[in-house]
Length: 152
Image (tube, rainbow, N blue to C red; front, side, top):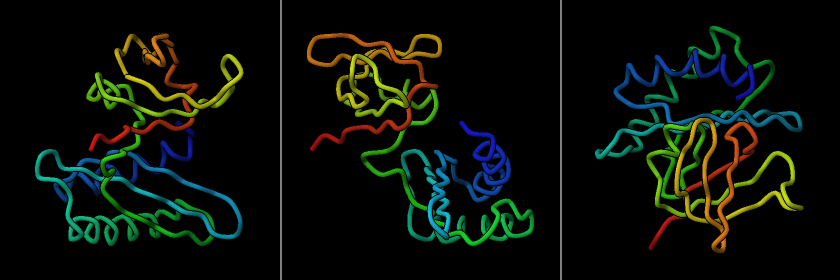
């Protein structure tokens, strides 16, 4: 996780938890004139409603503005991680052992960056993914993006 993301997490997490939710993850996208801060919140079995997103958005926006945490203009989005939820931390990967995931690596491995397969284990700081009967071990730091593949 980038230093900027860690600082944002430290500011946002207490706000989200005070409102009875869990901070699932956040993404700061910088490109062009306007930045985008996407905050994912969750609440176990109860799930997240639009009211939760509104409350977290209002409170987070106030904290971000007071702390001047993001230089320049930015757009703030707050949502549930959804069925194809992104995975950021080892604990989140552990929750989805046995599920299919898709991931994109920061750097190519065996000539490719994109993999889709069954998450079979978390071992130390690595995850094990079976792709077409071949098991791969990926360090979490080397993963640019990972998502659960929803089952219908």
